[in-house]
Length: 194
Image 1: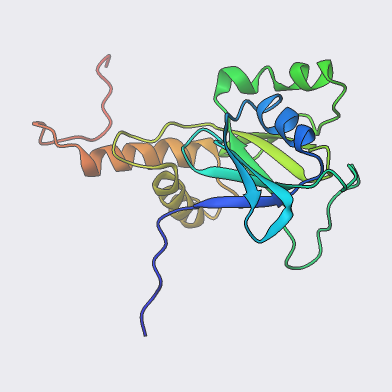
Image 2: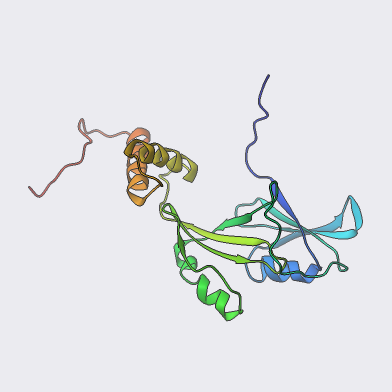
């Protein structure tokens, strides 16, 4: 038996209401360029809008002018999507509360997740959206997932309940030492002022 190896998220499709609600939210609030538009090929009564969340992958929305906007929280039953999370940089993250407030959109406030900071709010159709900002930059040639894996191992070894910034910093240092060569025979921490 062999695995079916995936290479990343291709797209996520959401059931939307009217076309303009989707455009106003995904592009007009979250800044995702509206890149493709066609009918839903499985249901001609619906539109199919495509947005680029910033990494070239796609968020797509099935729209139908007959579906009403319902801001009630989407179901969180087993098998349902709890929320979608999108990455923002630190400069944008610090402005999110004011930008949401200017539109009268309620939110969770900043939540410290140890390895990232998050803000949660609902889209016009009740889907919980998370805007997240990592607290670290992965070394060149590495990924956030690689740093998280190493930080997890360090956290477990230390007996800590969750990843903290010290685990992230040590993980980044480990990855740099492992992936970048040096002429030094001793790469351990030193105190040059002693």
